[in-house]
Amino acid sequence: MQVRQATLDDARHIVGLFVSGVSLWQRMDARGHVEDLPYDALTIYERWLHGGAWMSLETGAIWLNHLLSGNGYAYVVAEEGQILAYAEAFFNRELTPMNSHLHLAQMIVDDSCADEVHQTLADAILADARAPGRLSVTYPEYDKSLATYYRTHFGAKEAFRLTRYTFAAQIGQSFYKSQEYDNTSASMIDGWAMAVGRLTSPRAQWEAEWREHWKGIPQIIERSKYRQYVNASGHEALVCFHQQLYNTRQAEVYCWSPRHLSTQLLVAIRDMGHRLGFRALTLALPDAAIDLLPSESARDPNQQVIATVNV
Image 1 (cartoon, rainbow, N blue to C red):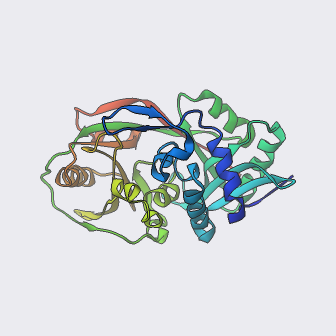
Image 2: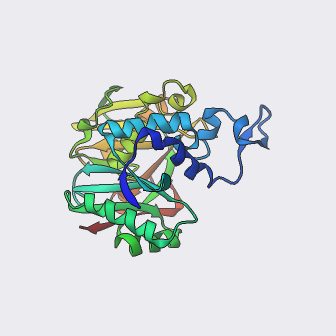
Image 3: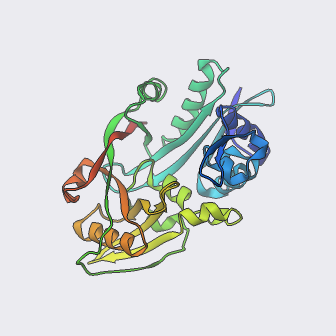
């Protein structure tokens, strides 16, 4: 059994790991009714909706090639030609309190594998985290089993939490400049914080949202086409409005910035969202930013935990 960086020849086996975890394949028909269908009857985009790039060989190979081109780490655990596990990680350098760290963004292990496979993969990831000195993971607060898993295999302990808030987009009374932004280089966010939407890590979310490699699947591009460079009274930021799947008038907001969220930037985000045609915006924020929110904000009861381990 060995842990190594994945190759494109592994893509089919990795897709098999992810697809085997989906018990039901569905799509919505023209009348808005959900129908059950076999996997082969779905389009690539319809498969994507069940879990992202690794739901199809076509998109899985594109994504893996992107990672192997210097945009992330892709690990496999292999034994006698069989892929037993897969994981993705991204190097991040951001503001305090996180600073430099390796973020484990995704991991899947074959259900039949013994605990040894889990720990072998964890040890390899931790070894790569020694250079930056820290590893981070994220998980929903309600998933106690996943919290136990990260604590047992990685030694990760909770660092802080984020909560999602939804409020109306509205015209703001502030001065800011904005323009469409299409530079996909991650060097733009080196040393920056993820001021809004840090549900994973700045680099992991950057690679997920800047999807020029999905141009052959216009439905994916359509939902994340609103990408803006903003300067709100001197507060520079890159903002992405990600249209929600079943509510086209509501957007999830992601924002990278050399500073944490400010009132000026929040007012600009609300104004941009309104001008782009959204009625409501959802922002995931740490507790330190809550005082900036409008009083009518609706709070999601589920929180996202960011856990870390110093290596």
